[in-house]
Image (cartoon, rainbow, N blue to C red):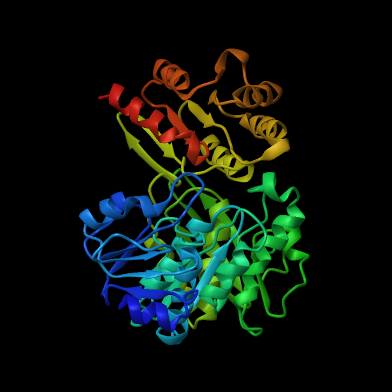
Length: 452
C-alpha cells in the first residue's frame, strides 16, 4: 500500500501528508509490536497516547505514521483529525476500490463470535481464497485493519465485530459493507453498559446498517430475542430446537473432544462433525455452513470443511498433559459461555475441577450472575474460584449441592493457584475459565510447572 495515496483518496479526515510518500506492509497500534515496514497508528487512548512512542516505533522498523499532530521524524506521516476515523476511511476506500468482488461475512453476537468466525473461514476455504480476522481484532481499529489486510486476490473474508455500546457495530458495518451477516446470540456481555438484553439486541442488529437490503442475515432461531426480531427483510435461521430453522442440527452426539450431528436443510440431510466439544458449538458450525451455502458451497462440502477447524489459543482447547486433562477456555467469560463450558466439563471422565475467575463488565447484576453460574456447578467435583465475586460463585455452588469441603473461594489468583496445585492429582480434568483481565492462563502455567 502507498500511505499518501491511500489516505488522501479515502479523504481520511482531510489529512495532510508530510515528508513524502511511503509504502508499508501492515499496521501496528503498539510500538513494541511494530515490524519492519509497518504503519504505526498513533492512537490516543484512556491510558496512554501513541504519539509518545514515535521513537520506539521508528527504532523497531516503522515505515510511516498515521497521527493527529506534527511529528519530529524524517519518516513520512499523514496528519489527520482522528486516527481512528482516518483508519476507517482508509478501510472503506479499500473495500470499495480493491475488494468490490470479495465476499465479506461479518460475525457478531454475545458469545461464540471467534469460534463462528474460525469455522466460517474453514468452510469458505473449501471453495475460495479466504482471509479472516486475526485473533480477536474486532474493534473500531481492529476491524478496519482486517479489511485493509485483505488483498484483492482474496475471494472471501470473514470479519468479527465486537462492541461495548450502541453505535459501534453500525460504524464497523459501514466500513466492512458485509455481504452476509451472522448474529450468534444475545446474551449478557456488556450488560453493565447497555443495561438490558433488548439494548444488546439493538446494538448487535446494527450489523445490517452497512449491508445491502437484499443481503442475507443469519440468526439463531433458538434465541428468543433474535427469533422475534423483524428488522430485516432477508433473514435465515439456524438452530437445534426450533423447527422453523432453515439450517437445523439433529442426532447430536459427542465426546470430550468433538461433536457429531446431522445438518438438515430443506430436503438435504448431511452428516457433520467438529473437532471441538460442546453442543453450543453446533450453533456456530451451523452458521458457518449456512454462510457457505449462501455463497454457493454445497452443504456436503461445507460440512467437510468443518473438520479443518483448529481452536485458537486459550479458547475451548482440550488436551492431555502431565497426566491431567486440561480444558483451556480462559480468553473470556460471560454467564452463557461459562455455563456452556461447565456442561462440557461435566461429561469428562475423572475428577472434574472448575477453576473460575470473575466475569467482568456485568455491572449491578454481577453478584447475581456469579451466583447463577455457581448453581450450574452441580455435577462438578471441585470449585476453586478467585476474585471479588469468588464468594458468589461459592454460594451458588453450595446451593447446587456441591459439598462444602470441595468449594474454595479466594480474593486473589495466587491463592487459588496454590489450592489447585494442592488439590490436583493424575486423572483429573480441569476447566480454566475467567474473563481476560483475570489471567486464568497464569494459573495453568503455574500448575504445569509444578507437574514437570
